[in-house]
Image (cartoon, rainbow, N blue to C red; front, side):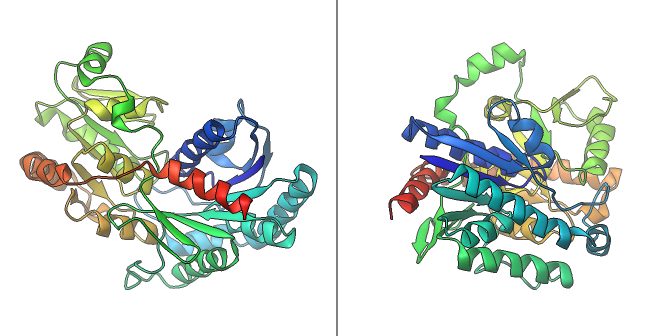
Length: 361
């Protein structure tokens, strides 16, 4: 069968989620043909493995700690024209490729194009409109996000919402699935072997901002205070220099989950993929939701029992030390809470099954 994926290219989380789903589809459908329409980080990530069509994504102004709703709107004044051009491109691709289903991760253009060509579609996005805390209302920005997601839910053949701590369930054509993970912990080598391969004598603390610009100030502050701790810190995906011997900075690593398996804790933003992996791998975390970013506020709200929360708007060296101290002092209680967290099945398998069922209908 033929599958067309439309994937947002902002950050690594969405592309990692769809890589996990694609992997399961390829296992279940040996004759699968896959094409991807995308942009940004995902364009570069998938370019050697699948035929790609480039579309244009939204622009996020360079920022070190927050999403400025006003700047985002002004930076995307011409995006409505690009949006309709994206739909045109995707429709042309559908008419040429003739996919059995269009799977769109966070990009409503895929659902619009699928509806216009009478093609079955599946929308994947973790923002849950039934549980989103809309008292965190950021005006026009929140309104636009809600409208786009509502449209996709209404017009897709099926919707998949990966959960964090909510129960997996089905409500009409909305499917709440377990966290979508590339590999479960048991599929990876033993921790002792990984510790030896990576050269660690002690479990490190991982720092990741998922390819986003918004966490640079956070990472810089961690690097600046790391020398106060008898801990090893591994920072992923930033072009910065360490300031102490206990900090290692690495580029993006496809085997990030192997590092996560041997880690003691994780520090990062409140992206859904990052938090899904922290939960499934049972790692306590210190998370900083990006200010004015609705999705991350919801994610952090759902993680109350499993993490320490920080405030990106109050970042400073003393504040950073206080938060790291709080994480280290609460590791045992957070680990005890995480012991009770269980999933019955990888959400990637559930998502692949829903996609195949959508085709069969």
